[in-house]
Amino acid sequence: MEHLISLKEWSPEKIRDILNLARDVKASPEKYSDAMNRKTLLMIFEKPSLRTRLSFEAGMTQMGGHAIYYNTNTSPMGSGKETISDSIKTASRFIDLIMARLFKHEDLIEMVEYATVPVINALTDDSHPC
Image 1 (cartoon, helix red, strand yellow):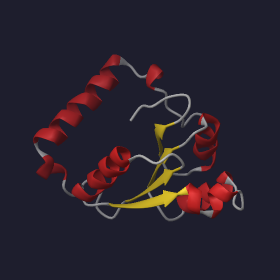
Image 2 (cartoon, rainbow, N blue to C red):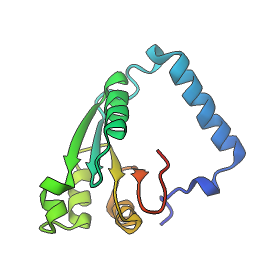
Image 3 (cartoon, helix red, strand yellow):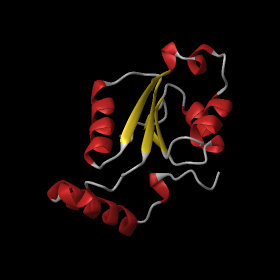
């Protein structure tokens, strides 16, 4: 899975560049007000979190994008009527980015395998990077 990026594989320079960009976004948010213009984030929540939802949704809005909240507990994907692979293939046709907060890391790996857009790990039983 060459498109699955682990922070462990990143160089110190790459991490420093990302932190410098984050510092600039925080210091000069107006420079990034259109950074996500016409972009849509699908937020998949198997495990709910107010802070995670607010931070991602507010961030997309502040940068000119849109976020869609998807609760697997009240959806066909969570009920087993739709497979992860089919749901993610379909979603990838309509959105630009996926954020998933899941119980099982293997479900995130499956999402990454079938997505044609970037997938952000917001939480799994393996890690909590966000």
